[in-house]
Image (tube, rainbow, N blue to C red):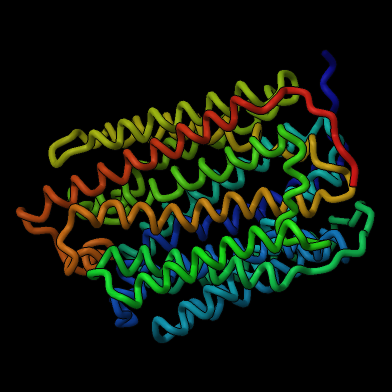
Length: 476
């Protein structure tokens, strides 16, 4: 079978997209590593620490489908480039934040830019590359995510240990500016612009629902339940139910459930959701184990995980080529099984386990992520109706982002059931050191969270294996 070569324009376009993905990927890991130092420096209340991460993810989640739709209306490349500018400004102000309220506010701005970039990147690839090259393009693009995670871990560990945490945000400014300038020079909109209506009411309902559930989980992790906590939870669940009902009747819904008539697309989106729900919090849990239980510095902890991200980067192009030749089921499902094995290894970590055990788990997890993401992304875009690549790309990011934002809160909630409530946030953000009598309960809590992640990954693997290799597209 003769391999189709990429054109010069396609290679240059992929380079620009690669840089954008890399920048946003850096921010998903670097903040986790810097969180304890950051919160202590700005004297943030412990109850607000988790929202430095959750606010960013929540905004990206809410905007993903709307941004994709705006991209379909005004040009995916134009919205993609605007995302760079907003992300740069948000990063600059995050670095200048004087207190937790400002930090959370500017993280929201940063999240808007991240949504513009992430929700349209897949659609730009779909516009630029024919179906027989998309798997390879997504494979190379996945290197950006893995390399960004590596850079985030290394920079986060180095900057937090030896420099000012503010530079984890300032560093985005020159890199983002270069990527923006390069994108203006190279990228061109090639997709057909389609008039769309925004679903603001649906987005508000989804936001209220997710916020209610997340706030409930974070409150239950650190304090006893009360009347207000359960009313917040009921409000969140009611809003989510209302969102699902409204979306089925809207002419232009935020989440187009009619797309689920494509069975292969449905299972691919579910696989993305459960994979994010199960795997996103793993890095956070590992950092808490390595820094809390084992007493390593942020830099020492991060170095143990770098080999896995390097392997993930190398596996991306291979997975893309496999997907182009044999379909997504084998590489995507195989990748999920590998990630399950890695998490199972992490769940065996104890106070005296050799640290190389962490690196072995990281290597296996890197193989799994390198196999899964390019295959799953290509599977989604290959069966997407050609006129709504932006909406489908946004839906893919939305499902993954809902899983990500819930993963952090769910993992912390599960782990917190084994830890005295008055110590939960203090331990998780690193402002309270573990005493011998707390070490066992903290270790047990992390293990339980890992086992919860494995259950989610099993559901992801089942969803991935159920999709058909060949599915006829439907048009809208």
